[in-house]
Picture (cartoon, helix red, strand yellow):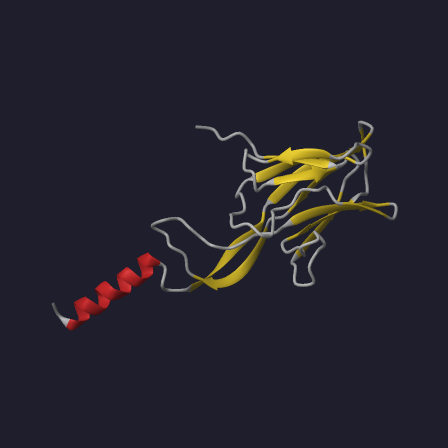
Length: 169
């Protein structure tokens, strides 16, 4: 083999195996579309915040990228996604990326703060779903469980439930 051919073969192997890093944006929090109600009535003017990094206690970390919006007259909102610039590699053949994505959502109105209770567990490896999640939040309801797509790492208890759209096959 010629030296150039060997060099190209080594470069190809390194790229396929994930040894080469490249600049790109990674998804660190999903897009969420939802409605906020209280006792079945829409609530306008609720501040909604999505953050892509949380502390172990579930608070927004100082290093977080945040997106903010306010509910409209019908209580509707749309927020996210959040992407970060990164120099990383992955193993495309295996489709495995070993990163954690501890993102979360919070609501505030009239001086009160609601932790919807749903966030990715910061101790787990996983991925951010690249779909628009649907949130249904009731500020007057008791805390309830929310599991997305049957994934045990995507569980929360709070004023919101989140759901992924059904996949169409």
